[in-house]
Figure (cartoon, rainbow, N blue to C red):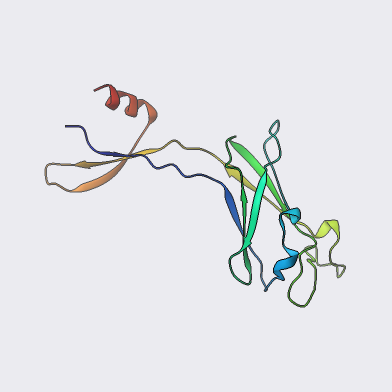
Length: 140
């Protein structure tokens, strides 16, 4: 009898943004965030934003489908509870274009399939299979 299979796919459709102090939620909008994709792909369509707690926000977007490196830019018109805008470059002049926070992320769809097999002692283990192994097992 073939071993049971579990296929897990994770949709990459949001990022969580953490600040070092409490943020005025009305100053954090999707207009303050941009995500650009790998060369030749369109900018990522942002679908929403929500406050998770005083310092953490979630930005949602259409699920990524193109593998590669994405650039995420945040700010600079985001203010803390005292009204101070971002001063990422720490030059004392807040809210400038150079105060945007920029980072990259890499999207790589691994297409991993994990199986749980019982050996003769009835112990369970997880084993990662390569795509060729999946085809061979499926054909058996």
